[in-house]
Length: 66
Image (cartoon, rainbow, N blue to C red; front, side):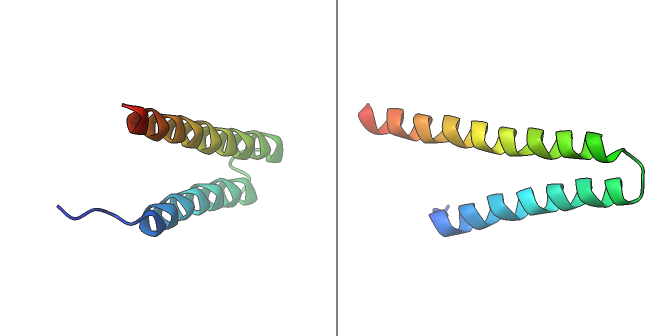
């Protein structure tokens, strides 16, 4: 199995973030959820991506130390 380049991984992560954020915005635009809930969901989405990104970075650092 070939190894993915970091640029491909970054593009996939950015694409999934944009897709999820766009979905939240569209759902809020159709008044399925309130704008306050949409803002909260977007903040939570950013928090999840930063949190998991930090965990992955620490995991990679720990792997290099072994």
